[in-house]
Image 1 (cartoon, rainbow, N blue to C red):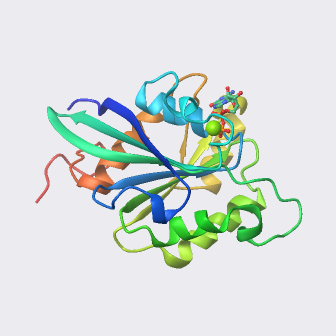
Image 2 (cartoon, protein in one colour):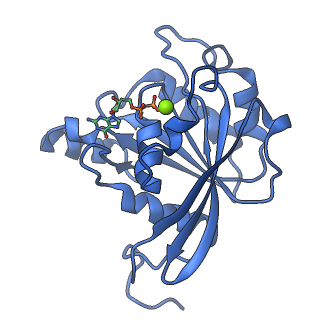
Length: 212
Ligand SMILES: Nc1nc2c(ncn2[C@@H]2O[C@H](COP(=O)(O)OP(=O)(O)O)[C@@H](O)[C@H]2O)c(=O)[nH]1
Ligand SMILES: [Mg+2]
C-alpha cells in the first residue's frame, strides 16, 4: 500500500459567492477555520507547495473563496479533487450569530453548494473549546447531508505536551491533530479525503485485511 500523494495542485479561481463559483462538476473539500488557525499552512503542507494558498491571498482577496484543483496519486491510480479555501472567520468574544462574524455569502456557500463532500474544520489545538468553533460545528451539523462528512483537524499540535495531546484526543474522538511546523499528521487527512470522496482507501483502520 502506498501513501496518497498530491501530484498536482493549481490555483484556479477566486469567487465572491456561490453565484460566481466554478461549476459544481467536481467533488470538493472545503477548508474552514478562524483567521490565523494555520489554514494556508495546512493547505500548503497537504499539497506540498510552499506558497499555494498564500499566493492567492493577496490583500483584498482574503475575503474570497479560493479554488484549487488537485490530483492525488494513490496505488497508481489518479484521483482529482477540488480544494476550497474559505476566508477565515473572526474572533467573537460575545455570542454573535454566525452571519455577523462570517459573511452571509460564505454561510450560503457551505450550506448550499452541492459539490462539497468533506468539510475540514481547522481548530487551534491550544484553544479547543473556542465558542465560535463550537458554533460552526453545530451550524454545519444542522444541514450536513448523508453524502458529506465533517472532520475536525487540530493545528499547532506541536505547542501541546503529551498530556494535553492525550486530553485533546479524549475530548474530540475522531479528530486529527497535525503540525505544519513538524510536518506531521497530514497523512491521515489524505486518507480521509480519499475515503470520503472515492471510497477507495484501504487504510489500516478497517478490521482484518479483506473486504467482503
Ligand atoms: N507552531 C505552529 N505554527 C503554525 C502551524 N500552522 C501554522 N502556523 C503558524 O501560524 C501562523 C498563521 O498561519 P497561516 O497558515 O497563515 O494561517 P491562516 O490565517 O489560517 O491561513 C503563521 O505564523 C504560521 O507559521 C503549526 O502547525 N504549528
Ligand atoms: Mg491564510
